[in-house]
Image 1 (cartoon, rainbow, N blue to C red):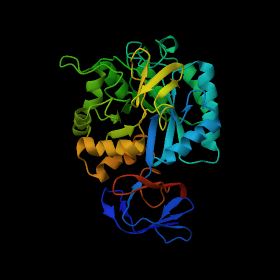
Image 2: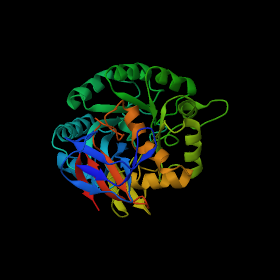
Image 3: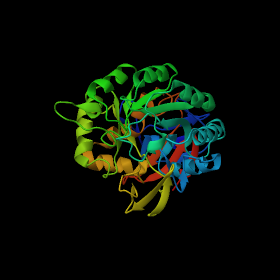
Image 4: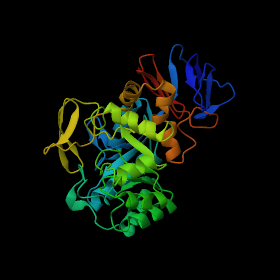
Length: 375
């Protein structure tokens, strides 16, 4: 495959008008045969990576079967997404194990649309006070490595990301142990102090989960988890839908973290891609009005955001040029996960592309050298 005539984003952040060659699903330095995509007048960006999402188009990750996960993958491809992790909301052990099993089938099977590349466990070691949409009766007051061993065994090496609250008893030990297993730890749904949070960061935690939401906020005498994540080198997940964070907060996060530590996520639920109405998020009933997802008590419950819209919002909120904003959706999440094979247009990397028009609408999505969406 050859991508010709487009304005493509180079690994160093600059632009190139050189043709892009793809061979055997990877970017290549040598000209290849096969399909030619004329990208004249279009932006050619690394494919988007959504590390934190609970579903879309009527499918809730919790309890989803392989067909449901494929349906999400197909929809995500229309939004420029080429890789994603399915986020399992805190649930019963049985439901969690079943969902892990179905996700493994998709990860190890033939891809359809965007590739499912890993499993994110959001809980169960989370704060009651900052539970958000988490079912309180299923949260754990003490970290249980044994439970995570069961989940990891079921995941067959595909559990890649875990969110936990630093104040949970044993959280720093669990962080260290998960890190030793090659799993990235993110901190959130938490009322942790600054010191509690820094203990987990020093134990290996690398990110903050939807920073600014479902967490103790900054106070000048006690910066808390919010202050620790912004002050440290941890990556910062941001839901840039204009609801979870005001544009000013997005700008503040960026000024604090810089270009290389911001990660755009959707935290989307099954309502993404659909109209307002009644939906589910794990065990919860969710009402979506004007695109805003909330529990019956008014607590915000995920989003209906897509990654394609997130890119537009980031640029609108911050004034950043496309090449810097695009890193939030590609290189940064890949780097945080330790994946050098995705998130960049570079010889030898997986041939993942989001090709956009001048209005930032998705025209093509290419995943692993496959055209998985064409407008």
